[in-house]
Length: 233
Image (cartoon, rainbow, N blue to C red):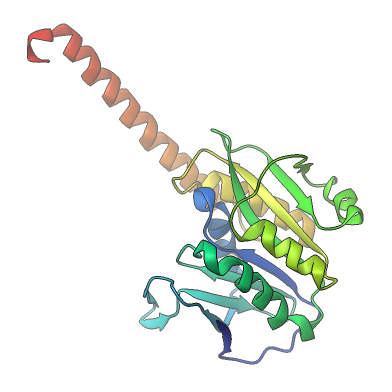
């Protein structure tokens, strides 16, 4: 496992945001919007054993599945594939090691919590002082179990003396949840003055919700017809 650098960026104590696929893909959705709007530069990728052999094509150019985008103040770690559980510990260590010399200001891990709704965003942190600041933006996630890379990365950052927080958006379930992603993005905008447009994600969420509502109504009509004509059941 290693990081392959494809370009040089003159970093100035960047914020590192990890947004690998998780529940509702809320972190991935928010991160993609940031990459697109801020026109972040692709500058390297993580070579990880055991991940699916997928190549992403954008504007005719092939890209590896687990890659990094950045400007001098911000890094987004993005993936098109789910990170295998047996690779998470080593990948967390590699992420911290990769950016060690750049003196990152803060590591931020994005994730989702299944709640049957997409309303709140919760926060966790690897230091008490960070929790106090987080309370200005989100509710603190007081007790529970966190899967995937999110919690693991915070521990590895703490082992190496780096500040790290996690932002966890409520999400309706396993399907992609643009509203949960928009909620994450709103918090990131407030915390780091990113000024990234959230409206398109909210509009996309409304479109999905309307489609689901239509499907539910069609299902109810079908069920009522079955009751009217029980001989066909």
